[in-house]
Length: 242
Image 1 (cartoon, one colour):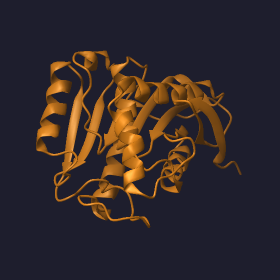
Image 2 (cartoon, helix red, strand yellow; image 1 turned 180 degrees about the vertical axis):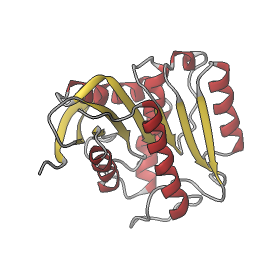
Image 3 (spheres, one colour; image 1 turned 90 degrees about the vertical axis):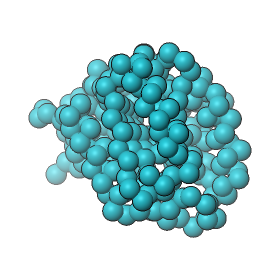
């Protein structure tokens, strides 16, 4: 019986050798595809399993790398890597386009039917792909209400869904308002879901690393956010037989 197959893919970006995780659905034909961006700690098994789950639903899925195969356990090390990235839209776009090119070139990918989802820093990457006019059918983010350079959101060519915790100190109400204002002014088809009581990185299960103030797992909302991501894909990038 045909099953999902996975493999590691290496590719250059941001002066590093990135190590992504590709998951291919059963069958042999071209499929709609999803790019998956991890949170600032980097690509780990949690996001690899997201790619596998999407492949089980019929998508070609690539969970991309942010840090050249590194996964950060120390929050300060992560911030030293991520803060300069988040301050440089061109670097974010370079990381995103490199991964998007890998996904688009896969023989199992329908190059005209690709969506991108991202978490934290990975969400900032996929939003910058949209602001750069990338041909995407949907953009979904969790904990990634970043705003871009003035006017560039008008380049977004697809619906945008964003989820955030109401108690997220990194994405507070002022940041939510700024993101909403940017999307609205640009005429984007956008939605924002606020998960009551959730803090930053609420979607991610606990990991063995230093406790960071304002960061906490919320299992119920994590499940809801995943269902919301799947609903976005079902609406904008449905899997059809073939």
